[in-house]
Length: 602
Image 1 (cartoon, rainbow, N blue to C red):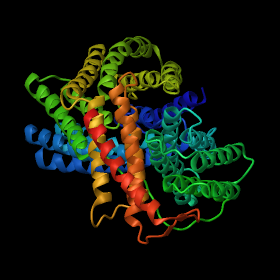
Image 2: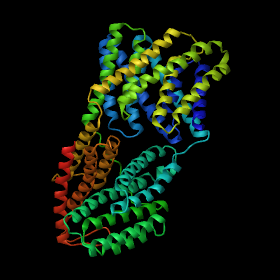
Image 3: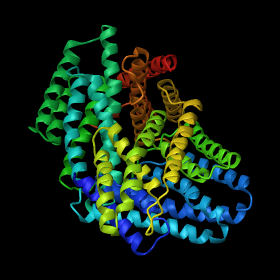
Image 4: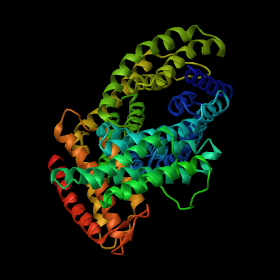
């Protein structure tokens, strides 16, 4: 309710300012409010920052295209298609709202450039007006979100970090044989990515988060290190059971001691130092290097967690999540966006459709936005249906009720309930309900054509709705026939990412380090997880093998960096040369086995 009320207030303020200063097309300010609105103020600020940057870049490029190609529609549309394709390609290599900035710089060229090309003499004024209207929507939303009942991301971030301690303990117990491994593993991977995304947005609103951002990323990297160490350990223990090498005296006692220590840490009975002491006792009971590595990684995270919670300064080493975007996927995404512009533009030229420019703009926006969303084809299908159905209430409000209104007060009284209902749907926790609210709001802002002196045109409203359905239909067709998204495609994508990462690990002069490898693999695993169908055993097996590669790569990096025959691990336990050799040989066999399973499944 609070989010819906704040979004409605932001929209009305933006429209009031636009009407007061007699801006050219106030509907762009309203449209921007729906696009920028987020439940948390940090997300609004992050999204607004990148939207302004993308808008300014897009407006500059639009003026360049108008200056060069305004007299030739084919060249203009060709340049527009290439630019949108490049920006969409670039959006696949950015994270969080940075990707949105790339997308904005793409379709802002269409928003500014197409009206500018149709009226080349006033292109500069058109560009200035669009930038002003968009900036007005951004400023209005950011101001209301930050001042009126602000919902900060920082508490959610601190709570997520606190909660993940229990999740990590449950995962560690599952690895040691006491819990549902698959469920705990998926939960931990998802929470790890969630914390990184929260951190990326909370930086914009909280000074403490900004000051501790690198420390928090180091903490997240330590968490990923535990996941990597755990995977190889799990496979090692299962291999020992299969080959009947399980030594009750050497391993079972260590596992029991470690499980007790982890449970005590989960309950808060011991801190990081206490966990280290208990795991040192377990370490003395076994010579298995992978078990000791797991103990060391878990202890390192526990101590880092305690240090961060107490506000201690950590080492100034910079760390960041490594991007794992696949150039092949990015290429197909950029190609779809470019073809969307080409198809809509060609239809506009050959059919001489009066609303063809609107369809082209909406088609560009739809395909560019779909590039940053998962499951684009179903979303495009849902968008076509939502636009069709939302036309009815929009028609009633705009063409039947607004003509009876006089003054901004009556206008706000009629428009506010529609905006509030759309925002209320956007605040729902179910993604499909959020989508209905978001797309309904976009349609209402697009067909409203709100002005100081309204011109009511029922035929024009229906044509804009048809243009919106046409635009999402084009996006649906392109996403369905050109490299369509599927679990099989996701598996092939992860296979390419994994092969590149493993190749960098095993290269003679590799530069990839453990944090870079682990963060890249975790992000790729989280993307793959959303595509795996649980009713398909082959996909489940492939996902298990892909997770195992995380542990494999970690072990290979450890072995690659090992210089002495007798090494001392992070817990202070001496690793015998024979044990180190056996672990190295096991890791090689483990890698070959899981790469084969993953290749067969993918």
